[in-house]
Image 1 (cartoon, rainbow, N blue to C red):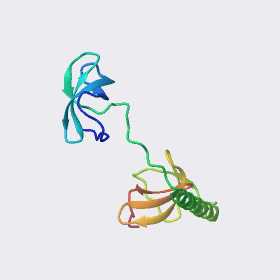
Image 2: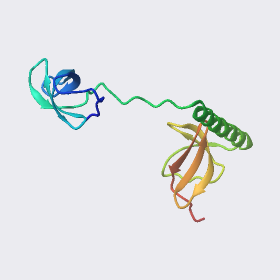
Image 3: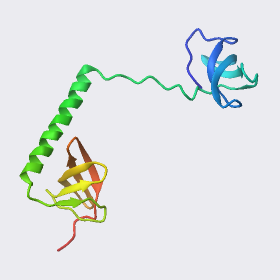
Image 4: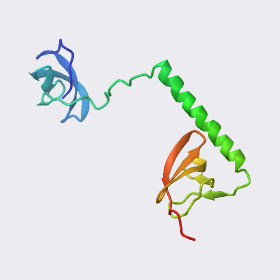
Length: 148
């Protein structure tokens, strides 16, 4: 059930998803339950049904403050700087294709089909590794450490 504004009352119009018409249409409010719309009647097909929030309506997206945006940009730039430093330090290492069935060691370079080129920054026992990509750090699964 949707929260409504305090002035919403029975007999007023409201946008709702009509279960018969299968569309977001204007309805007349038939019943309220506290401050929420309970039942509505479609103005198109005249059928009465439980209120359903319009399918096309979404909650407003909270905008990030300048401080949050600056912090996120700083984090990304520090990840990029670390990635560049590590890729330069290991420039002669071969690039391995990523596979969950392959084993990787600290400092291995890998090519992931979705995330791109990365370098292993940390091994997490027994079968995970932290990979630094150009703008992100991801934890991936691998075959694990093999006893040699």
